[in-house]
Amino acid sequence: LKCWPGLIEAYRNYLPVSEATPVITLQEGNTPLIPAPTLAERIGKQVQVYLKYDGLNPTGSFKDRGMTMAISKAKEEGSKAVICASTGNTSASAAAYARRAGMKAFVLIPDGYVALGKLAQALLYGAEVLAIKGNFDRALNIVREMAEHYPITLVNSVNPYRLEGQKTAAFEVVDALGDAPDWLCIPVGNAGNISAYWMGFCQYHSVGKCSRLPQMMGFQAAGAAPLVSGHPVENPETLATAIRIGNPASWDIAVAAKDASKGSFSAVTDAEILDAYRLLASGEGIFCEPASAASVAGLLKVKDQVPEGIKIVCVLTGNGLKDPDTAITHSNNKFKAGIAPEMEAVAKVMGF
Ligand code: F0G
Image (cartoon, rainbow, N blue to C red; front, side, top):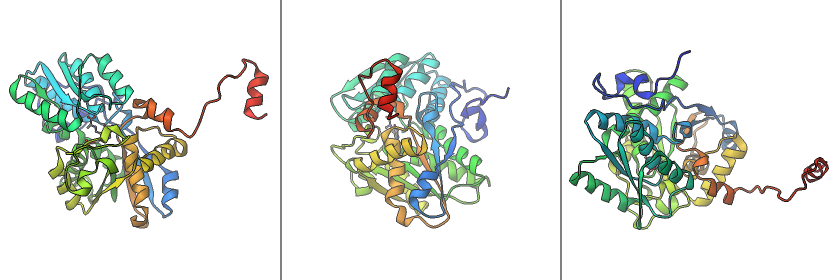
């Protein structure tokens, strides 16, 4: 039996690790690249669309890629505790990997704006969860300051090891397709992941693993779209709480990636996000969280600009199970309640 060893072992030659690095892994990475024929049909050209379903990582989001690196390096450096600000997924991932490493995890979250599944995870993994009366941007400022004043390692994506780990998603896309896609559509919040993907594609390109580089197409929620408007948003709002961010930490790197790749940033409304979210589930059989659906909402929004015949990868950053409330509230489907426990009654409701 050949087991996937986790992404640090799989891509060791491309990562800043040494023999001295204790590898803290939950065998993250190696997520599927799933063809999306329903989406391709919606675009209406001879395009191929694939979904990089990173919601299948151990804690259900792409953050695990960054966290295996950040926690392994923190452990190597002798750190006893980590801290992060989070809209939910980073906190779940940091909590899991910190506990795996025998470290303490402190997470700051915006009170009332974290999806239920993510909160459940952070609590059960045993993190110290601190809800602040402020948004993610405020929380990030606080933890950055904390890490300067106290002996605690910051594991937000401003920690360079996070992006190092996350760039492996680009490696996997190239390994699966045999080359880079033409377009990479990705949701953008704090702008770490788009930066990491670009690093990964560039690194693979520089060693001849791919012959071209994709155009980086970043999508933000309309109420939280600082990179689209060009200035920070004081009070970001979107139902896609994972990307409810007004002042992305990796702003400059993301803009550089967008420019170098001849890509673009666009905004998608919550209604467009929900349409894509439902279409992914009912049309492709893939349940992602709302923020993840922004990549697909964006692709559908700019479909007239899609060149004929290209290969497109949309990144699905998180698992739909993270946010059951949104699924139940915004499904167009209702379950039928109060049915008598008899076959005839069930058959009748089914229309037989
Ligand atoms: N999709 C999901 C599901 C996320 O959780 C995030 C970010 C993003 C997209 C955006 O990625 O920040 O690298 O541009 N979540 C962070 C968190 C902010 O705290 O979990 P980004």
